[in-house]
Image (cartoon, rainbow, N blue to C red; front, side, top):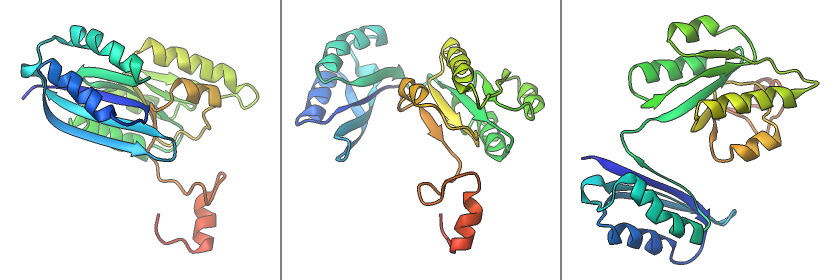
Length: 215
């Protein structure tokens, strides 16, 4: 059954779910699935709704236009898309490739339904692997004395490719605050972490010495 996905995040308040579902119902949408979550610490509301596309009275462009005033009213960050459309995911990697290899295998086997428009690395180690997959590889060294230039170039590359999500697959650089602000909510760090208990370049050794047995 073809579905239209409405994804939304906004400041929490009473009646949000009713306001959004009423909009969907008004335009003939039959809800197939609704997931919601409120973070009490930040005071933010999140929801993802799957709507039966065949029941909607509007096509996607018109539906987006109709929802814009509602989104403005509740100060929402939102998207409405066809379920079959694939997210454009950029991968960042440094010199350890196990997370990258796993992502590529799952992408190639269609376990992860996504497009990979580019892989960016501060080292050249995985150029051959990436280019054999037919994916553009971007070598972008990071100068510790001038990181701003590197991340400014990265920003241009990502925007130029229309990237929806950034996945850090053992990318061993700290993203600067201004970069994080632009990509807020659109960066995923997938390797295991000992933060905040064990920080620095070798947290595994300190965790082992401390006797940590479960992460």
